[in-house]
Picture 1 (cartoon, rainbow, N blue to C red):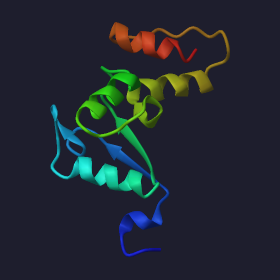
Picture 2: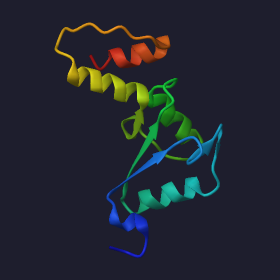
Picture 3: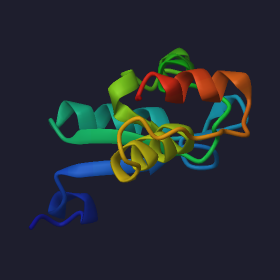
Picture 4: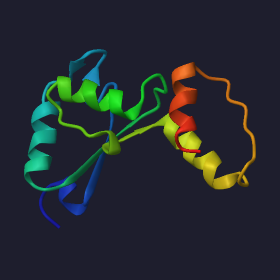
Length: 111
């Protein structure tokens, strides 16, 4: 293990609001930190409990702030919930969602 905490891990998962950005601006040092991790070849992912955006929209938001992100690197609470239900419910089981229309459409793709 190296001298840095991160050296003991192969994947770094960042929370978003308050860690990578605050409202609509990157936190000082976040862009540089993620860039350094990428340059070192370390895997990076992003997690958010905000279900109002799809993974692709979050990735676009991050990239627009200077934090390179791909949709497959972003885990949203809506997508995590949909995957959990898909894995735990029997096939052809119906489930009623009480959520924003965008969230329901996003989750329906996992079915």
